[in-house]
Length: 130
Image (cartoon, rainbow, N blue to C red; front, side, top):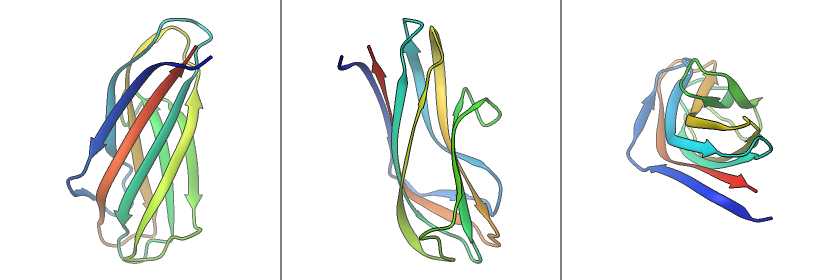
């Protein structure tokens, strides 16, 4: 069965990520499932410039906020990560929250960074399957 609901947020203004602190870079509000067996599929892409001495990136998609339950964790990723370089990264995963409604956030954290990173553009999408 196809997707029965789609949610998207896009940010194209530069956002600063402070050295190694996990930081929210995108928020999807009011993502809702109406049936217990529904699965949310997340598809995200982020274009960023790493800070000085960055050696790895950890991505998370969390329920509600920066301190919410991590439903997707990718990393720490070291492939393609170089200090003070620009790259585009795909972040994908799923969540099966049951009947639920609320926000999801995409976060990023860097290992070893001694200067701030810049998020150049980010998109976070959620598709609810039937």
